[in-house]
Image (cartoon, rainbow, N blue to C red):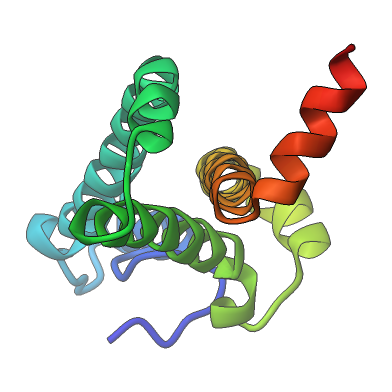
Length: 160
């Protein structure tokens, strides 16, 4: 378990590596850190960021088709699927943006001290939340417009 708040993943820090190198140089006993413990956490973090980036790119590239699909949906199973997709975007984006809360710090401190770790989180969380909110607004406006015929009549009168 990673109990150190200065690192995102468990494993030796730069100071521990330097300390062990110094001990090697002066012929003192030293500890050899495990590569598995050091690289596994960062590998999982990179995998998460690549999957989030792929999800963002895919959702942005298919947004026009999604809008056409969302407008053709009648209440039922497809509407539930769309709602779950929007909820997943907002949940994952909100979870990624709450990363400093889980590390016991703030974005200001994290961006200053650990820029290389916090920028990917910020860069993935903001687009996911924006995509989720935009889909929510598009779908909500379409459902409101279809559920209330008076709004449609007012819009048609305003066009003349």
